[in-house]
Image (tube, rainbow, N blue to C red; front, side, top):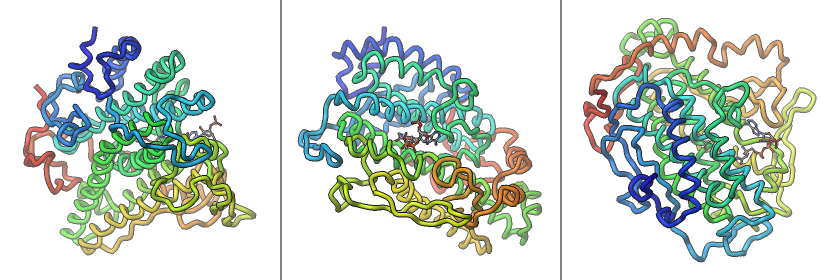
Length: 474
Ligand code: BYC
C-alpha cells in the first residue's frame, strides 16, 4: 500500500482521490518494474545529486539532494488553476476552459495524450546504456536528471489518463509501459523515438533537437482548452528547459574542445583531428543533419486534417497562441507549404488551418537556427574557418511532402542514385559512429575530471564546484 502524500508529491489531492489511488496502485509497481528493466543500466544503487520537484511553488520545484533513482519521488504537478481561463481558439473560443473531457473529443484527446506520453519512456529507453561511457560525473548526473524527469513526464500523462479517461485510460497507461523503443513488434509511436541513441554526441544532439520538439509540442498543448492538460504541460515545460540546456551546452563543449585541439596543433584535416582523440567538426555537422531531419518529421505532415481538427476542437493550439494577433479561428487565413513538383521545390499556399504542423515546425526551426548560431560563435571565437549549417527542410525526410524525395542539404532535388552516392558525406556512417564510440569506450568518473573529447562546463550544478561528487557509486 502506497503512502500517497509521502511517496508521491502532488498538488492534485491524491490523498483523497480514491479512484486515482486505485489506478495508481496497479500502475505504480508496473512503472517501477519498467524502471528497473529499462531505466539507466546498473544505476539502481547509485546516489545521485538530483533535483526533485516537491511543489509548484518557486522554492519547491527544484530541491537538490542525493537520491537513489528508484527512490526518486515521481510527483504529479499541475500549474495552479486560473478560474477565469477560457478556450482561446477554434470553434469553442470564448467558452470557459473545460475541467472535464468534452465527450465528443474524448478519443482524439486521448490519442494526443498517449502520443505525448509515449515519447517520455521511449527517450529513457534510448539512453539507458550511456552511463557506461559518460565523459564526467557532472554529465552522468545530468543524464540521470533528464531520465528521472522524463519518467515524471510519463507520470504527468498517466495522471491525465487515469483521472479523466476511466478504463480506456488505464489500459493506455499500461500500454505506455509495454511498448519499447526500437522493438519490431511493439515499437514506440513516433519515428525518432525508435532510433538508437548510441553515444554521447547523439545524446546531446537529441536533447538539443528532439527535446526541443518536446518544448514546442508542450507549448501547443499548454494552450489546450482542456485545462488539466494545459496546466500539466505548463509545469512540464519548467523541467524541459534543463534538458535543452544539457544538449546545447554538451554540443557546445564538444565543439569547443575540438577547436582548442585544432588551434593548438594547427591542423584542420578531419583525420588529423580524430587522431588527437577529439571529434572533427565534419562529423558534428553530420550528426546535426541527422538529428535535425529526424526531429522535423516529428511535427507530422505539412498538410494535416488531424492538426486542423485538433485546433478547431480547441485541443491543441499554436506556439504562443494567446500572443498571436489574429482571429484564432483561422477560417480565412492561408499559409505557405512546400512540395516537390517536376524536380523542383515549389511553395504553395494552403488554408492555414491545415498547415498547423508546418507552422509549428517553422517556429521550431527559427529557435534551432539561433542555437546553431551560438555553436558557430564558439567556432568563430576560436578562429577556426568552419561553418555549421542547417540542412534544407526537405533533406532526409520521411514524413510529409518531402517524403520519398531525395533532397540534398542545399535543397537540390536529386535522383535516388546521386543522393545515395553522397549520403556518406551528409549523414553519419557506420565508420563515423564507430569512431565516436571509440572515444567513449569507458566512463570518466573521477570528480572534476573530463574526457579528452569534451571541454568542462562553465559551472557546476546548483552552484556546486565542478569537482563535486555528483554521483556516489558505493
Ligand atoms: N512518426 O496528420 P499527420 C517530447 C503519423 S517530443 C511516425 O501528419 P498529426 C520529448 C500520425 O500519427 C513531443 N508516425 O499527423 C522529446 C498519423 O497516423 P494515423 C511529443 C507519424 O496527427 C524528447 C499519420 O502519420 N509530443 O515530448 O497531425 C524526449 C498522419 O500524420 C509521425 C507530440 O508529438 C512520425 N514522426 O501529427 C522526451 C504531441 N508523424 O492517423 C520527450 C502530440 C505523424 O494515420 N502529438 N505520424 O494513424 C501530436 O500532436 C501529433 O500526433 C503529431 C503528428 C504532431 C506527432
